[in-house]
Image 1 (cartoon, one colour):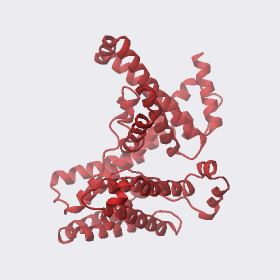
Image 2: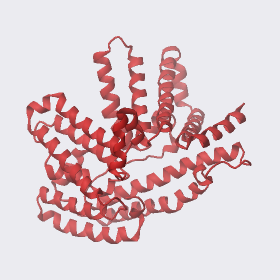
Image 3: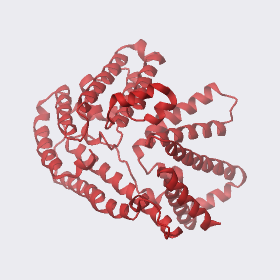
Image 4: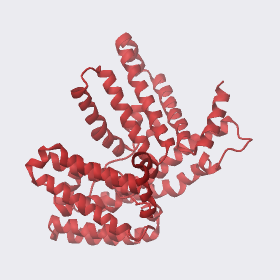
Length: 413
């Protein structure tokens, strides 16, 4: 929803829409509630600054994904077969490459990547729709009682509060919320929603803007007179800017969804306090990290243990970690620098796993003592904060990143 989610026009429409939905919901069946949510989602998505084909493409994608998941869920044979689900997931990934990640598409598809000129627009929300579509297909394969209802599946894919900026919710909790009318909102609920919306808007419009003006993005380059301290300050400010901007939109999305009786997962949990990289990814963009853990890391680790039994457990774990973070980096942006960003975090997480393995094998007493030390906790948090902030160099354009890295290396040497 981008800047639209913080505008007066958004809230002027949001509150009446939520009120009317809550008044009508107890009188509607789950299918009708899903239909109303689809209509409201299209109403809000239609106000985004996007290509005219945007809404049509989104509806078509949602209809096809819902139909595919429903077909798989209704057929015991298709649920047992790996191929139908794999074809659906591959199709979703291919659409994502062609319409969103043109650099990666050119690497995999060569001349076919020329479809970029044919599409003519960046498809808003497609990456989040892809995650939800994959979750929908996976839930359909696991379902034994009933296939996903088509309208509920489409409402899930198009649900406007989390369409553009997340969090990445899962289908089962969404379907459970949709199956029953939303509970009446008490005064304390309204207070919590109002505070959450206010906090989100304040983070986006005030705190994020303050830190952005002092970040490397705000500097639009590195002046010759900027010393190492200025570079480090710019990196820390950039980290804070990304956090307050993204966490603010997550707050708005979670509070908005709650107005319609839908629970969205928390997306941030004080990431600045993370004591190590694993702790960081359990606090930062939590819904995305957990999606990747469930659908990439665990799946790949299980496959390696079944098909590559010659690999030691540590090697299989490291391979699954590296592949997961490779994907996580590539998802964040369309370019080689984002792949390097994923490699950077993959190496950091792999190093943490190896260090823990060595300490547990050679000095288990030391590992326990460090875990109980407050001083070590503070130093670990500072190191993790710096590791994440310095890694943001890889998210910049390459010349600026190289220049900033050279200044930091010169300072350290």
